[in-house]
Image 1 (cartoon, rainbow, N blue to C red):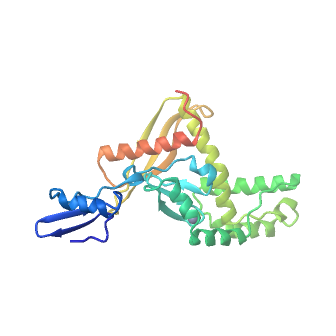
Image 2 (image 1 turned 180 degrees about the vertical axis):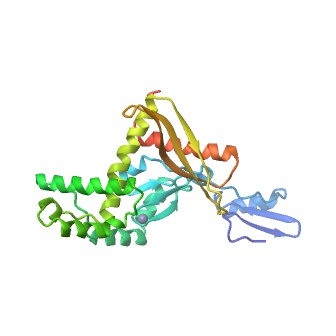
Image 3 (image 1 turned 30 degrees about the vertical axis):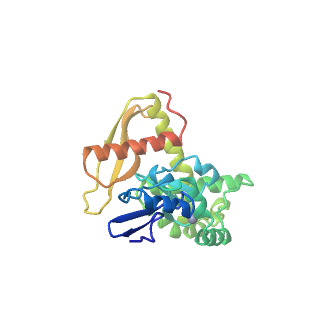
Length: 271
Ligand SMILES: [Zn+2]
């Protein structure tokens, strides 16, 4: 019997089973093995990093800022350049390194580099006022539950209906720029404010789960907390995570992992 797929090669003759261990040396060892009593073939064990089930580490993002964690799945990381979720369970950071050296990632990175980039540079007061106007309208449409695609029509309309305004004449914020401002500027600010409030005030959490039949269910987390500015108890959306089970233990574990992730994304909790 020979198994080419295993690192260990085994052969048998009648009732004799010989196990050759490539780690043990040359032919003299196999001769010794043939003289030893028959031994049953040992099941192959996972060796090295595969046994440790490496989890995503937020520290990797310092060296690779284009990767992020995958909500509810610490065995994967997300490459935002390739828009893919990839495993890091076997080699950990080396999985990230290996992906970054792959042809597909390098091609995507090159294509992204050649794309025109959004500019938020401010060279004058007019630039600042224009950016503020773009930001205000982005927040207004998001808080009013208006689709971000609305900005694709809004931007040229503003330039058209305010021909006497220097600010309006420079207004250029379609859906891509509005989305970028909301995700990269407004969201981190609101999230940081909420997490800072959670450090010093009591709060309660509420979760819910989607009732669809997909393998993974979506679980939004909301926070009920006293708002110092309005002097009212408010409910704020915290984040979303996925679960593959509907048990209380599974929901709690995933929620706890999400809170741990948020904990590491900000300053340590002052509790
Ligand atoms: Zn990539």
